[in-house]
Length: 269
Length: 293
Image (cartoon, rainbow over all chains, first blue to last red; front, side, top):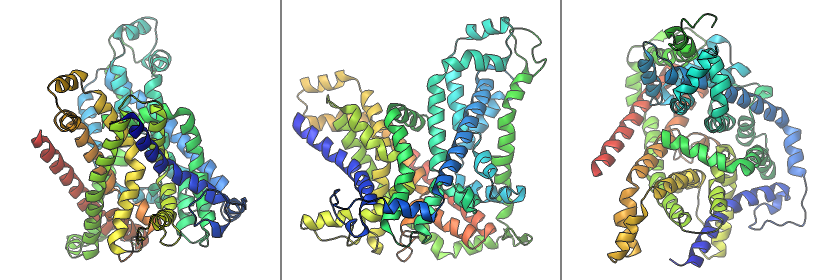
């Protein structure tokens, strides 16, 4: 195949992925009647759709809720993932391989089994309609533990022994010696768990009913489905754009890390 | 963590246990207990508010007579049957293009990957507009090109394929990257040898590239099967399962049983049964594809 044909195909592909997003963003500024057009331009751009969104739903609050929840989850997945991963890779204790087997096994269990009992657990704990229900069930991930374990296995034992002779305990070794060497795996686990938490919508729909505690994707979903948008396409698309833009901005700066992290996750599964 | 070091180099088991403790607690609470509890739930009728009521195997006899549930499973399978081959073909084609010596490779890769990072809710709201019959971008373009408009989301035969196309558009970036990793693992000399033997590029593709990508294809099939079985938010936002239940996915049906009707025991039974189907399908896929090897 000739080079120009390759480029033409790549550009057509690129347009197929980019144009819908551009169309969406332009539609949020168009008057309602012009949304059903192919082009991006309008003679009458305005912020009316965004005004409608901010007027009807507390979307700024939902943004902060999502940010808070995702940061807590990400931080915790990294912290506990690395601690357990360290124990599984650098410490010797009876039952270690069994524990590893259990963790691998949990990755095979479809979440459809645990979803309903998990909800009931939240009800019984009185956690429904609280941040705890959004954060605590996501605090540890089997996948995080396994990625840390694999990375830590390649760290030379001499380094750890030297630190032990200097009087470090295992937690100190983990945080002072190993953490500075582990940037790649921390970034991978961080991005994947942040994205998972930020984009999750099924679990919030189940455990959160109070509007002031809703996460951003949940609130946008309910806005679009629940009729609050009054059939205003512009407002629906504006809410969707507000949900998309933060992650697209972060992605624009760190796209290489995003792609590598998510590919690693896919390959390691 | 005070005196956990009896000697300097030898580590004690106690540190190991203490450091594993977070996971053990987490496992008991959020994995072990729910599994055991869901096993109890399937023999009960319960709406969370009133006391649980033992009903033996009646949830199962109800399940096997529940036509809607089997429709929802069929719909999910229809989704997979369209989504998976489409995903593999599109991902492979774009990966092959990106694997050539071209400029702006990183830019194109990043562009194709963009929908992967964006929330499914955004994609669904956006595509609902793209699919609109009179005013949607797709039908407007097709009218311009002189093609008859397609009743994307309003026709029972088109609705699920439409969702499958959208899901492919959303996820294909990830699979392009996985295929690129696979393609880069194929040694160059294989192609050089083939060229000396006079093999055309199409022959090279079928005799070198495709066999070498077998493990990547297995991975793509299994990942998109597992993802496809949890199809929920797309029909939830786009169609509510309609028209006439044609996009009612199994996950959406379980969600409705549990959180719309409050049938916890029955929903847990459905979840159990559905998880069993998922594991079966994935196992069969593994067997089937590995035998081909």
